[in-house]
Length: 186
Image: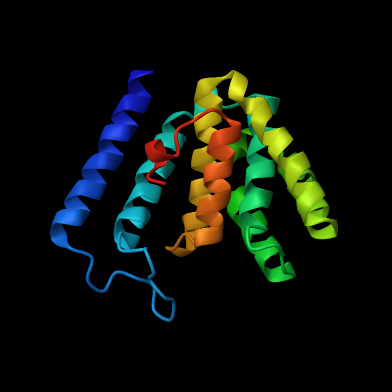
């Protein structure tokens, strides 16, 4: 558990140091910043979470982590209520390039991710319920539960920006996994 305390400390340190420098000009061009004053710190936080996730690669080999992570990736992709083909392909590519997810055969990952995206696309509310149930199964193992949220964060932040809808589904996943959203800067 000490590792997760270090992750929290690193994330807090990044957020504090970013806050001390100010937030001028850190938003993504063409997008309103709203309450997104810490856009740069979110990108740094994603980097820290990605590194910490990679350090757990040897521990994250269970089917429950695989399945919950694919559900999380689908939920992040569909956070705005739809998934266009280009977005689906982009997230699928991120999944296949993820070092930790290379613990699993690519066809298993693709099949599970696409199943969840199809559920969410067909009937978003019902699909969302089913996806959240799949995510919640990882709550039994705290290391895997945190890794599922980290995986979602890495996918959401791959473009350097985490949209409010993506933040919301990450918060909901934290609730389903009995984790504090503040632990992830949410």
